[in-house]
Image (tube, rainbow over all chains, first blue to last red; front, side):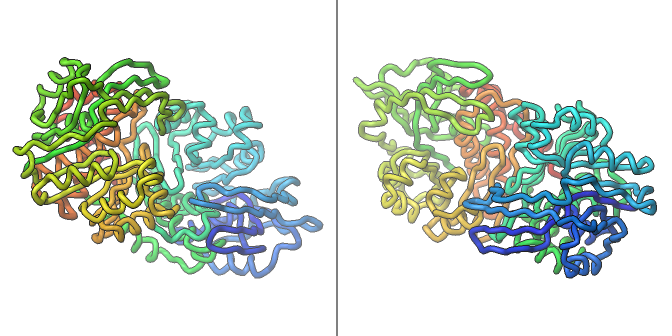
Length: 301
Length: 301
């Protein structure tokens, strides 16, 4: 079941209470692809500038990630983000964003990718998400992410997008903002009315909630005191989830629930180290081993 | 296995986005007792003033709650609390507190209660908690609660108390404040060094975490959009947990985990209505029915 992701590829500089890194590999499509590739090959669509270090391309190429959709645009510069986490690290303070190439025309999906069956539209302007979706030939599962900026400034475009996706993954604050509901279950149900058949609400260290016509599924986060850098946790979650779903070739009640669990565990590795460092050393067995441990941490009679 | 609770008995006035009640039954020992009494008889120790309405005594007396330790003090007034919840209702704003009788000498534990085996010391001044504990003849399980005020102003007394209890139940903010650790697992482990053999961290709508030498156990909250008044949720949780433990007659790994689940479900009923209203209509079967539903909401393969 072919799996495609569209999203950002960036160069990050991050500071947390545990250290600091400069000019490291980042971006939603990167975290997603590395995470998903533990379970299923990934087709990556995104655009970088001429300055994008070849070493980062090599890093991605070592995994089952098809880079035919990675455009290196002449005369452009790669997206850059600088952020800092403090205290409980639940939220990043953005110190600097240089959109660079992300502020130009979006990427185009290669002909060979247009038959992709499972698709994740990582966060970007909802009009671009729709444009990318329009290049695909009737995918079986489309899941999108979004952010507070678009909920605030591009609500109509976002609502239009929501009518054409099967699922959405967003965080608790975004779910509340989108629906003007404080209660997250109520917010999830409201989002179902907007189009998607399922809603995954990410609550950071508090886990995830899945709301669909099948009811509600709740999952804590993997409890750990090893959190060095939360950057990419949400995209790693989505990658683990979508990679699992693509490997299962289905997204029914059973697969979605297991998908959330695989996403949760994948994200728990991501945050253990800066940038994508921990994801690079990870494989399917590593995820499954921790997943078994996680199940034991939730078991009661 | 005899179960005793010491704590406040009060008259509350509460406003939430869903309504408003005045002069209703409240207090930690009240919520705890009603919650625990679904699983096991409870011995209640607390003190009220002459103004305490007889109808509230009758309410408690209808359940298997032994009121031999309920002192009605002549010339004193009952503890009163007025609070308001806004938005997601995760935290109450206290508008008025009249300590009244709680600012006088504490209650004394009746002779007949001093052999109690399982004990919950609901939140009050840690010196009073220790004094009450000293009146008991070597209980088998002592669990305490506390609050930010005592962590801030009576840290030494609180640390002394922690050396003589088996378990503590506290919320996430208190755990962070007590240990100066942002990460809750790290905070839980730090509290284990202070004396208790287990720590239950309550995270409101985000569930609970149990940390002990046996490892970590995590449980989401019961997901519901029916939240009318969160007052008493924490004490109902503790009551459900301790009532279950007393009925099991043990507090090993297995019982503690199941205890957290019973507490979680009991609390989920408490918050569905104002004051103790929903708890009054509840019985063991009601809790167990929702517990089965909850298990299904967490099941994945």
